[in-house]
Amino acid sequence: MVQTIDTASFARSMRERIIRPASREILIAILAGSDQEQDLTLPTNCEGLGRVHHFNRIRSCWPENPLPIDPASKALDLSRVDRLQAQVFQNAACAWRCWYCYVPYNLLSGDASKGRWMTTDALVKLYASEPSPPAVIDLSGGSPDLAPEWIPWMMRSLRDAGLSESTYLWSDDNLSTDYLFTVLSEEDRRTLIEYRNYGRVCCVKGFDVESFSFNTTATPEGYEKQFDILGRYLELGIDLYGYVTLTGPDPEAAKTGVPNLLDRLQTLSERLPLRVVPLEIVSFTPTDERTKAEGKKSELADRVQRAAIEVWSRELEHRFSKSELELNIADVPIR
Image 1 (cartoon, rainbow, N blue to C red):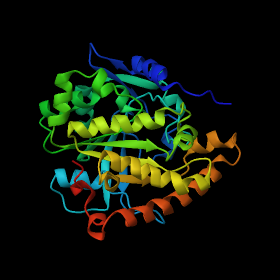
Image 2: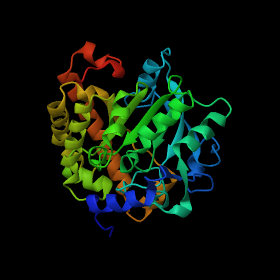
Image 3: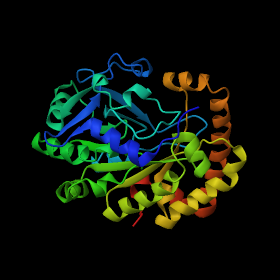
């Protein structure tokens, strides 16, 4: 039996392990030689701390995923593409333990032996030293929102290196903490808000309380807190997008859970669902190893997400006009 996570206390513990504010260092996961490396299609780079990821718009039997392809293309004035390379760095901790996560849990525990302490100046130097570095940098994890300073520090380092106009910065956020408001300085928050080539994607875990806990192993109140945090992000005026994972333990629950989720998103902003992309949960090596001990969990979750995506697609067609559904995701107004 997996112990249920108390998000607030566990997040504090994880944050303490991965950030050194005085020296402006972040614990970055070492990908070379890790259990994650065998799932990578390209060798690790940046001295084993980074990887190049190909974001693909087209997915068979699943809605398209334009993130971060379209926001990055708009910011950098690029033509439409269906495939985009990004330089990925992962911080070494997360407050949740989503069973479908592609990252091994030992890279999410704030273990200093699995990471390297790095300043953002050093990360940018490694990135710029790569042959033909991608124009997009993805700050991933782990959970970047455990150390929200990472993003504005990276922005300043890119500016200092003369790269802020030629690169697009993208960061992931799993909505587990409000640290952007409670620990980030006003100066850092202002830097984040005013930086032009930046987009933030927030991942909503599940479509109701039960699916949230099923996915994250966290206590149920975290489901509603996701929307409180998301609402505060919207008020900042940053370029905001969303993912949602539609797995859970009950296929029947999707019939009411997905419409309720869309209602909740529209309460924050009427067109916000048009900036949210359902992620298809697929198998990775860590996922397979975790679910072996839990019998048919992955098979059940797959049935649920197949049922849920049908409801999601049908609801979008009911709630929005054809012209709204055809909008470039980066052009959807949400304020």
